[in-house]
Amino acid sequence: MLRWNEESSQVQAAALMRPAVSASAKVEAICQTIMSDVKEQGDIALLDMAKKFDNRANPRLRVPLDEINASEQALSAELKYAIDTAYANVKRFHEAQLPKDIKLSTQPGVECELKYQAIEAVGIYVPGGSAPLPSSVIMQGVLAQLSGAKTVVLATPVQGDESINPAILYAAKLCGITTLIESGGAGAIAAMAYGTESVPKVNKIFGPGNSFVTMAKQLVAQTIPGMAIDMPAGPSEVLVIADERANPEFIAADLLSQAEHGADSQVILLCNSESIIEQTQQALTRQLAKLSRKDTAEQALANSSLILVDSVEQAFDVSAQYGPEHLILQLADSTPYLDKVKNAGSVFVGDYTPESAGDYASGTNHVLPTYGYSATYSSLNLLDFFRTYTVQTISKSGLTQLSKAILPLADAEGLDAHANAVSIRLEAIKNEQ
Image (cartoon, rainbow, N blue to C red; front, top):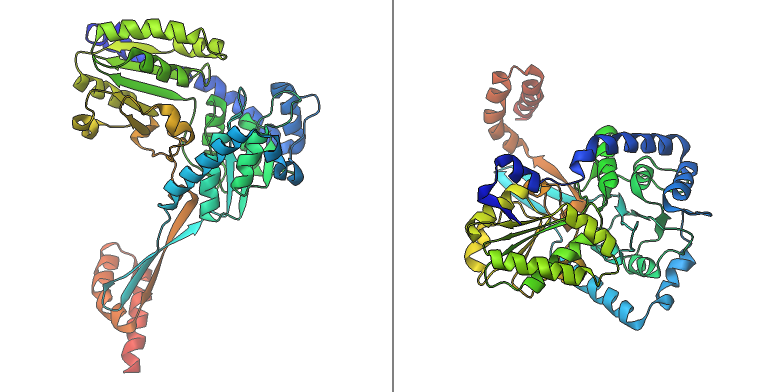
């Protein structure tokens, strides 16, 4: 337990430091090598990486369509219902985000429009190094489906020589995705960015991942002209703000639900009660012992902090400084504090709103900014799969009137050709009269 007000600014900063950030230079060098290999060798590089990193003796890249179509036969009725429900809820929430074109006259004879157009080719990355994530297929695939993107490529790693998880395939089938690539990490990101013999080149890459995936996404966006990414979505993290009447068992469960994602995940508790923190520590020990991913969660907990603050108000200040991916509010009454929420990717309000609901089936999106990028990036939404462009149509009378603004501005900026493009038209209009 760290007593916030008793620590130096250096110790406070260390408590909020993401573990993967300190390794960024090493990660970048590895990613650059991987990207170069994929660019030069294409499919061969991906197959070699599957053997090296995923322990696959006989790797493949493309999943056959008949395997995708038959996937639901391998699912239990309970899992199929769960995937169907999550798909329906996520689709319902994001359908409400479908954009509408705007058209208006800014002044007589000057008509302006804002048009939305789906990004034609998108790449979806679904983590799977330690566990298959059909929920991540749904969170991204539904949006690609609603946008009407022409090309959708889904890449996910498969460990060993097991078959790709049928839940991944069924979720992809619901979303209308037919191009599935069994490849992960920085190599998969590079393949979607450059294109290979088996992997179509895309215009924008989406999806969360570990520090290597995050770094590769940033590098392709910086080095490949026209390439875009959704956000730097890296290892998962959660911050819980709890008061003196919060349930320690609930807090521990929420912390562990993120800690089990990966060894580089991070969880933080901010609480104004020393007793609740101590009880949470005890609950963590009890619950951790029962987890199938105990070792992974333990490693994540080593990078995490339980912090005693003086007040709930101070907790919100510390949370804003950290900028959590997930922010859980276990408070007697969260309403007065909602306006204090800053720099959070997604917020979960109340004792009975676990982060797991947003991860799977409530309807909101679980692809969220990490590393503190929530200060400038938003949760994944349907508009991320669109680009906008503008249209203007001006009549003769409209240009005549608008020239009174254009010509003085062009003159002030010393751009004679800009002014001439208007003046020559004004002269033509005058000669017609």
